[in-house]
Amino acid sequence: MITGKNYIGNTLKASGDKTHKTINPRLNIQNQTAFYEATSDEVDEAVELAWSAFKIYRKVAGVKRAEFLNAIADEILALDQELLDSYTSESGLPEARAIGERGRTVFQLRSFADLVSNEDWRENTIDEAMPERTPIPKDDLRRTLIPLGPVVVFAASNFPLAFSTAGGDTASALAAGCPVIVKAHAMHSGTAELVASAIIKAAERTGMPNGVFSNIMGRGRTVGVKLVKHDKVKAVGFTGSISGGRALFDIASQRKEPIPVFAEMGSINPVIITQKAIENRSDNIATAFAGSITMGAGQFCTKPGLLLTVEGDGTDQFKKDLAKKTIAIAPQYMLHPDIKKAFVDNVNMVSSQAGTEVVGKVEKAIDANEGPSQITSVSGKEFLANPKLHLEAFGPFALVVKAKDQEELINIINGLDGQLTGTIIAEKEDHPNLHDVIDALENRVGRIIFNGVPTGVEVCPSMQHGGPYPASTDSRFTAVGTNSIKRWVRPVSYQSFPNALLPCALKR
Ligand code: NAP
Image (cartoon, rainbow, N blue to C red; front, side, top):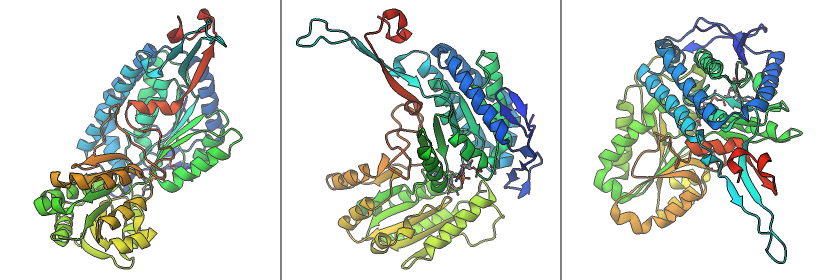
């Protein structure tokens, strides 16, 4: 049952008087429950509890943490229809998407459970002593990875399950041995509370310390800022806007003890389409990208927002086909009226820049919170000269850029901000000419896709979801896949330690 209260450790609390309500984008009305924003004392209590829980939880054996993570997955599934109903009523996304995202969330939790059920993930390294070494004997050295401490996770608006309360950040941090305090996204507070209740049940059932998890609500930045400034918080995970991620990163680095903020933010995900690919299969490419641009109403961090072509036969026809197919796909509800407004404003801003042409846009009447798809185009020269054309429009929109030749295309890639992904659509005959494109992309993106679409992020160890700033604040790490656990740990070496005092996995 949704109560509208915060989970401060295992206890539901609502001592404040500030409330907010979520919105049903389909019906364009407020949902009924009033959610109590956490007071300053409640925030402090959640962090203090997390700090005391950390002392116990960091020592909990991997198999027990795995039991906890699997129990969370079971409890989420047990929420059944109540969770699906809350998800759809707060996001406007269809039930099929809710089921898919729940499956991904459960899969992530179980993947981390598998990972930590043995100690291999800690990359334990042992250099045995060499007392006879000359001229200086070598000491015994053993290195492992240990958890950082309490982690604050900012839930993402566009993934109410898989990147929210029990999403990838929470699952990886709990797997690493870090207690988690989630700052729920205000626009899916009910879904957040339900999932939090599943985590708390799992924690109690598997004997985890009170404070290993809290779910707190707030709007208007106060709660989030207080959490990031708290001296007992040791790392932050964030998915959302560049301005939000950057603000939290700056706050964290100005603390007396700066802490890491792993923020996954904006991306326009360039796609390079060769002339030969357009000549051979323009129609198929247009179909695939119309689907990818509009998937989930374009509200994916990997949505292809920039299609780079080189002037030639078929380029103009390609962009017309793309626009026709994109706007033929039925408009979908966006997550929230503010996100729709930001989308429409950004599309209008990009499409009113000098030299742009609106190739196609939805003209018919649509519901208040549906997202109107649009394709705009511009020349490579204009794109290079105007930074406003590089901005993300979070929704079903793409800008098609026509470069005059390969040299201009490479200049465009080199001039882009950091990106999560880059995609190459090319034919076999193009292969000898692609080395420069690949070199340029490697310097700008975290994942390069060949003859595919960037939407659809596989959860597996080789996935890289993160790229040079502003795609993320630390391009050395991934936010998806089991390697994302590395964000929440740090290495420690033990030199000349007696066996009895070494961590179990490092013992002789
Ligand atoms: P957001 O505005 O960045 O908010 C996300 C979370 O960060 C919220 O909990 C918010 O708390 C907090 N926050 C934001 N700015 C903050 C600040 N200066 N100080 C402290 N906390 C702050 O993102 P959103 O609500 O999800 O969507 C807004 C826009 O972000 C979208 O239109 C889209 O452009 C972009 N977005 C991008 C991605 C992506 O994956 N690239 C995903 C989602 C959204 P409060 O509620 O307290 O303000």
